[in-house]
Length: 145
Image 1 (cartoon, rainbow, N blue to C red):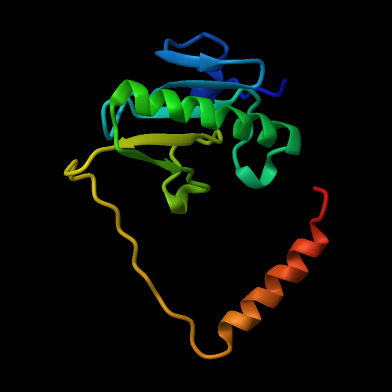
Image 2: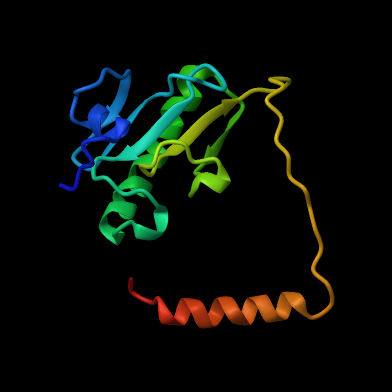
């Protein structure tokens, strides 16, 4: 299993650093965030060190995706939340601080004042068609990866 000896999440996976682990299996670990945005805020990490989602092997992505429903149900049960945000940042520009792929599961309740900025835009005429075509070409080149 690939590991980065300087990575804080790799150290948590290896039990070299303490964390409040709520779920673990052979592929993933889920634990309470030490800087929670809400009570019960979880982090889900693959055991293998991968910095970016774009570098994640399909088998590891499948393991992460397989764990999400069970962890999500437990999150809602334990926190009595009305819903949750599932968030993943890739790269420093997006807000990724720890360079180990991780997903935030943030419980949400009505009136929690966490806020969420969603600045809706609009495509100029013809641009939506161009972007769709570019995605179709890019995805045809990455089939099966």
